[in-house]
Length: 117
Image (tube, rainbow, N blue to C red; front, side):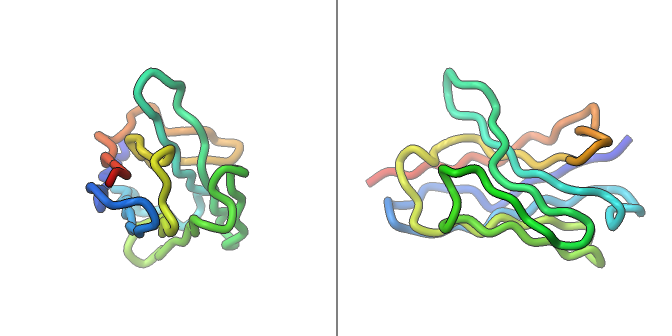
């Protein structure tokens, strides 16, 4: 089964930036739409950003203009560049497959992002 490994989280001050990475252990990464999700304490997991196989992107309204999703198919990696971070961005961030195939059955451990002064 596909393993997803997220990294790059940490503690950052409001207004700061982080770049998250997610590596997928699949040789056919290139054919998958990929999503970034986040889950804050006591809240449901929410979809943050999507990137298709052709590189088209879509974002939740709450992060539009601040976050950028990208991918490197040669490295089986999807990225999330997060700028102008706010306290409400604090959450555990996960990646997974998107599109019509839906998420892989197993999720990674996620990466914690904490925005605080």
